[in-house]
Amino acid sequence: MPELPEVEAYRRLAERAVGRTVAEVGAPDAWYVKGRTGPGELRGALVGREVVAARRTGKLLLLDTRAGPTLGLRFGMTGRLVMDGRPGVERLLYSSERQELRWCRFWLGFSGGGQLVVQDPRRLGGVELDPDEGRLGPDATRIGLAELRAALGTSRVALKARLMDQARIAGVGNLIADELLWRAGLDPRRPAGSLSAAESRRLHRSLRSGLALLMERGGSHTGDLQAERRAGGRCPRDGFALQRATVGGRTTWWCPRHQL
Image (tube, rainbow, N blue to C red; front, side, top):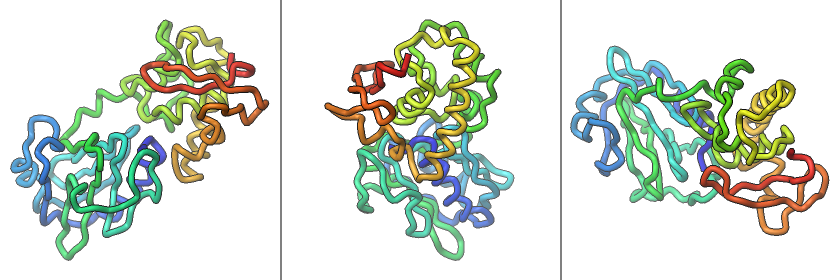
């Protein structure tokens, strides 16, 4: 599924659109266009506009246009960005690697040729003009220690659920949360506000170094814990049997020996 590392790969690929002018907007699925704008308004707002920047906050990809709106793209669980026929990532968990026309939910065609296409088999993503970026917390790759402590606060909400709250910290999804808490040695069920100063520092280091490693490896599914997130799985660190539960509405795996 597209989490922060995948969307960062999409952003890098989308940089190929910078300096190109939109000549065509394809939005065959009106449901995929979010906010108050319909497909017709989307075309009117984007055709003739030059793309001047490709940005990312958390799992939201943003394309800025010259003297025009910002296009926001969300990818849900199965969304894939394809630019000029090249996919942003080769593999997504829970999604097909095929490229089928019926899965093309949105595209931009550029003057002089070439396309930016969003393929989404399960239709869980969406596109929106001028999305409210203020609804997102600090990006997980850039969050400072003080910001992390503020995001955790004194909440009694489970630590994993707090980390995945995009209004608090933007970019942490299910797989990443399990991996980072495993690396930090923290129980995902703990109240978010129960961390000591030393544990907060450890979690912050895990966020920064763990996300950097996942991006270098090529995706959220490349964590050390991933292969063992299954029945009978064992902790890669100490060999202890992993536990499974639902935390924050998501399937969660952790090691009861070292995640305390």
